[in-house]
Length: 189
Image 1 (cartoon, rainbow, N blue to C red):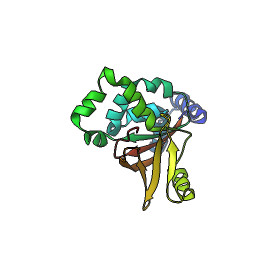
Image 2: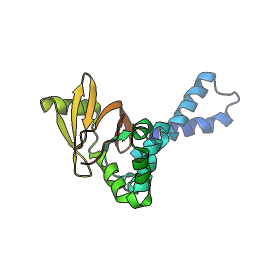
Image 3: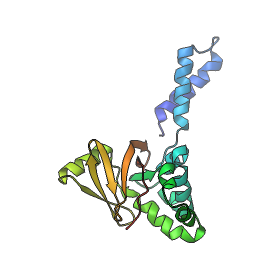
Image 4: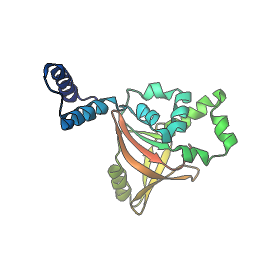
C-alpha cells in the first residue's frame, strides 16, 4: 500500500545514513529494512494474487482472460480466489481446455464470477449471513450469485451448480479490495 509517511521516513533515514559518522544500530536497521520491505509488497488485487505462489493457476487464468488490466485500478472488489489445489481437483482435460485461447470468453465469466463489487470482510459476510437467517446471496460481476452460509465459524460459498467452497484464508487486503482464498473453484451457473 502506498504510504507517504513511510516513504518520507525511509528517505530521511537513507539521507542521514551517509551523514552520520556511525552506522545504524541493529534495531534501527531492522526498522528501516521492515519499512523498505513494506513498500515492495503488492498493492492491487491482481498483484496480490500474482504474488502468492498458491494462487498461480488463478493468476494465469485471470491473465489469459484479460480482466487483470480492467481490475488493476478499479474497485473496490471482493475476490474469491481458488488455490492451485482447488484447480488440481478439476478434470485435467477441462482445466487444459479452459487455458486455451478459444476459452477466453468462458475464462472472463469464471473470473468475474469470483468477484463482487465492494470490499467485504469476512465479518461483513458473516453479518449478511446472520441477517439473512443463515444464508446470504452475493451478486457477482458476472451477474450470477454466490450463496454464502456458515459451517461453524467458517464461511462456505456455493455456486449455482452446487459446488461448495470453504474460505480458508480470509481478509487479505489490497489497495482495491479484499481477497478471500477458497478451496474449490466456483463456476457460473
